[in-house]
Image 1 (cartoon, rainbow, N blue to C red):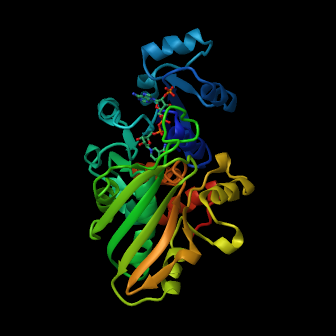
Image 2: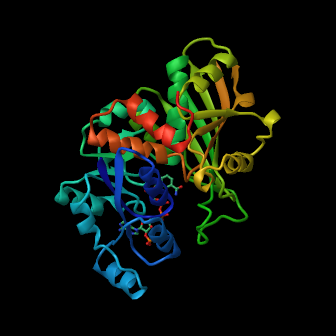
Image 3: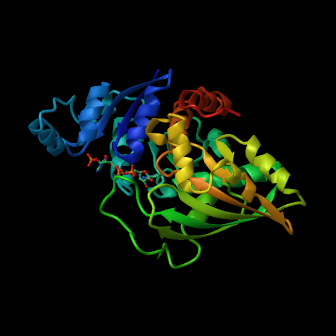
Length: 338
Ligand SMILES: NC(=O)c1ccc[n+]([C@@H]2O[C@H](COP(=O)([O-])OP(=O)(O)OC[C@H]3O[C@@H](n4cnc5c(N)ncnc54)[C@H](OP(=O)(O)O)[C@@H]3O)[C@@H](O)[C@H]2O)c1
């Protein structure tokens, strides 16, 4: 069993913790908490051991009636791999604690690539992370772009990629951020940070991205344009996307007319927290004109990196092929395995 800890129990950490609990080759040793909150009461009900982030947090949890197992330092003594789900840019401080404890670590996309020197999307570069001491799972948008651009590159060949990202404003439980009545250029310059981030994984493909935020919490929606290396029909591009792991094709005729419909589909499927782990491509948008392929791509920001985190744990632990790891992960989360 791979003994796993989760440091940072927010949008991503909570989901990764539950996904780890579903793996037959992993044990969730515990999660950390900074401030008492109902999510920790629910974790306790589920039987998840909770550790305080530090002594100050321990006092706050004790005052709120929790009887915690200790602090992050105690948790690190008991695990093989820690998943860092802390707020972005906390990774530098946390990395020192993990190294001191001799624990392997999976970081998230809010950290710089340079923190670990290895950025991860399972279907693109699982092998590069095998046996390493740390790795960074790229952000939700970068994951969606890498899966889909990588799939078309494998099936048809891609010489250049461009994408315009309509980004969700914030996560559903975050009441402090907007916008509520504006489209915010994020950033006003080109490219957005997503293009260089994709290139940390797909090293040979030139990419340009532009991004803006819109008033929704559901999902991100990308308009993707790929220059193909050879003439290909739309069916071939769709076939390459269909053949790749962790991509689903939906269409307007079946009722998928918005990101809200994709979330509703996940609800109907009975997915945990309505999570859509797959990159969602609208089949009817897949079009080829003058060797350029076009499609719409939906990304459920809260969920798409969850299977990647589970595979990153196995890559660091070693002893698994990409195929073995992704099958275990996909079967446990209800993702159709290809
Ligand atoms: N949310 C997304 O859509 C999304 C998608 C992909 C990747 N990411 C990346 O995933 C990472 C986590 O994002 P998130 O959205 O899950 O954050 P979040 O919801 O704000 O959760 C962060 C958690 O970290 C805890 N925490 C606070 N300070 C900490 C520290 N110094 N060390 C460890 N834990 C600490 C907080 O505890 P308390 O709640 O107890 O205060 C909270 O549970 C970031 O790198 C982000 O860029 C986020």
